[in-house]
Amino acid sequence: MLINLWVKDNFDGSIHQVGTDGHDSLDFLDGKVVYVNLQNGTGTLSGDYEFVDAPNLTDYISVTPEELKVNKTLIHRDLFKTVIND
Image (tube, rainbow, N blue to C red; front, side):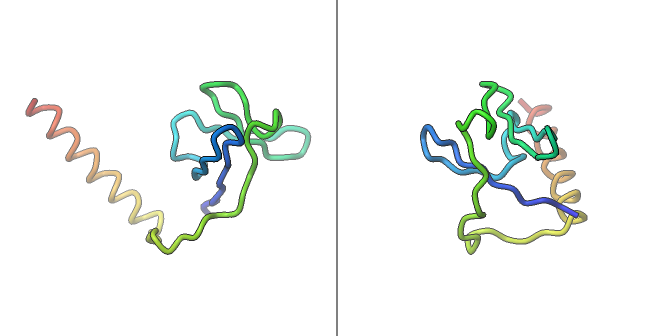
């Protein structure tokens, strides 16, 4: 099962899906899941971020975990070709 969590940065109002930024982290503290931004050390505990409902997803497509793995493999392959050719 995949979990689809979104957080809002209460400083600038931006919203992103947890896991799409390399600084994202989820922790389990005192029986609750909390979000932590590893770059700045803040998160939902500090109030700098908050969990929010997913935005309107009409601009997104749905993929299965198997399709995601294939896409990841293709992206890595194409990136490797670019790095080798440069």
